[in-house]
Image 1 (spheres, helix red, strand yellow):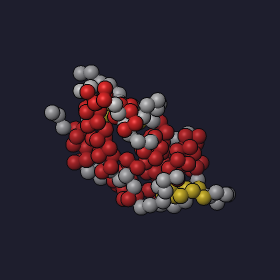
Image 2: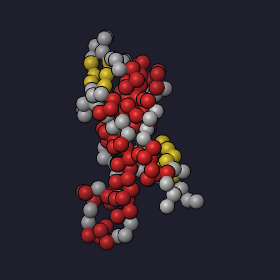
Image 3: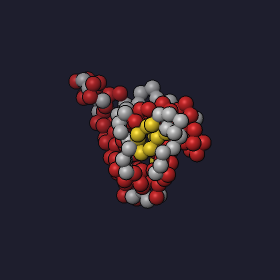
Image 4: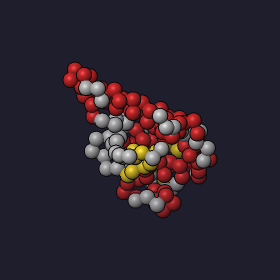
Length: 168
């Protein structure tokens, strides 16, 4: 069986994850951001960057940058000063994995030809582009179904994983 990685964003460095035996690229920054968001959902209190780095085994440099990007979307609130830190901006059940991924890495695009700005008549005639569009939809739908609450409680709905676990 041939296995290939689909980068979620052109040029992103990727960590490899296995979904149903296949690989999917997620940037390291996104991986660290998700770890931090899960920790914040577990703790439900103001947490310093130092504490997040330590508790999630994540480099402070990566999580500082990722949390700056996430705070622009309102998923976290940040407070400066000696008593500062970060806290979730919404309830864990109201934050999806898709929102976190896209806050850090931008829209999920498995191939540059799938994004709206790269569409052309030539690409539309190429039979592989509908496949990439379908992959994009599957990944987005999958990540949209999973909330921080699901990740904290370990109750990710098995049906959310069906597109990636069922054999054709």
